[in-house]
Image 1 (cartoon, rainbow, N blue to C red):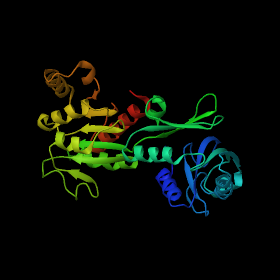
Image 2 (cartoon, rainbow, N blue to C red):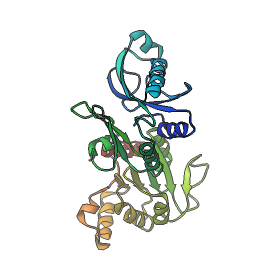
Image 3 (cartoon, one colour):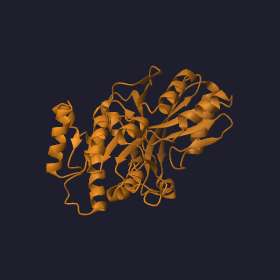
Image 4 (cartoon, one colour):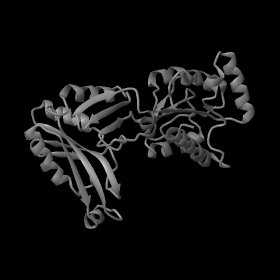
Length: 322
């Protein structure tokens, strides 16, 4: 969900501080709109703003509408056409149209519901915020909307009365093995929106020089993965070629709901891996979750190209489920 990162949290803080707060959310776009559905702007009762719904085109107008809505204690559904001139000013090729839902905190979006959303986000729990516009109903859902969760896509349902905002935890990448492929994969994954963690108990592999600024854990993979926590937005990539390291990590990954598990190795290596997992009691369905050999078959040669193939496969599974 392309939102101002801390929009719900900031809105709750401003409301509790007595400043008043309004959440403005892009609920639909047409044409070359500046921001995608789900983008958010937070407006305080004194006019302070954080975030963006249009890249600067209509924020001032939205703020005025938001302050008026806050005073009246009512929601608003705004629609703006972004002119070609305004669009050019924010770097767009042409204009577009956006619809924005304005929700004052308190009278419209209750403090309790917003606090529940903030708590879920802090716990890295995927939740859907559902708004019934005609009935002014609001609720959080942990189940339902599997495609929206998988695609990280907010939007209207078919009747265009129910808007669903998806709040997914950040993408996480667990890399077991601080090897050359990891040196290429980790920065690529960070650019793609992942928060990487590199696990390798072998002191000769992990270092600040090899992975500058990255989170590195020198514990055994099973212990490190248990501590890191795996969720439905986690990808696990095993790169050590060493069953003593890969197998314990696989056991943890296969018992989790992480969306992607990839393991480096030839077809022969993977066949041996499958046999060990069967002996350990994992079912064929469990084992089928493993992408091995890891990565799309694009004829990759060398660590950087292999990293590209791995990230491409992770993206395909995340967005298409296969």
